[in-house]
Length: 246
Image (cartoon, rainbow, N blue to C red; front, top):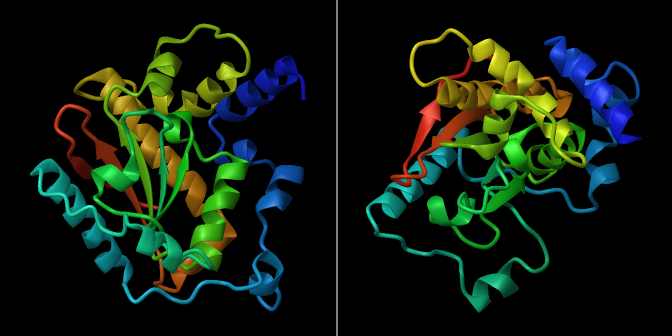
């Protein structure tokens, strides 16, 4: 797809404010449809994950407890030894899936004080839930059975800031900005810092996009998955929860 066509697609889909349009009504929508239940686990992975011992609420608490240790400089650095590498070499069962920004200052395993095999992390500028990102997270929650799925935005996010300021950027960067435009528009007129409002709204928008996935929706309906938003403060290291209603 040429850059011009990609930009035209993004502007038409996200600029219209339609989540369904952004995910696509034909080829892209088909890409995120799961197989029927009878073949789902065997067609995607030969050895699907076992159900976690943690409930969604317990998994979220484990994440937040780890962040509290990080903020208080009491990190335990769990599961970061060669023995852990060997333990998970043949399979993984991450207790949390996290969609976060590619920003070098936002490293989930560090800020949540976790280790190898604990988190299934997808990092992309602006923590946007585009098709391939959704597919990756579907694998974590649908096959590996992660009980918590968090979208984690962060303070002074450059991708959201670029979308907020507008303008044209080189290469494919504009495709990220079009994906974020809806959050920028939806956050206008709210009290407080306009950029931070857009960053937090972007978390909510991406959660909504993820909730449209049939894999994610079915796990949520079964009570085996919780969708939650987070906001990482670059100045303090603290993660606060972002309210969200599907």
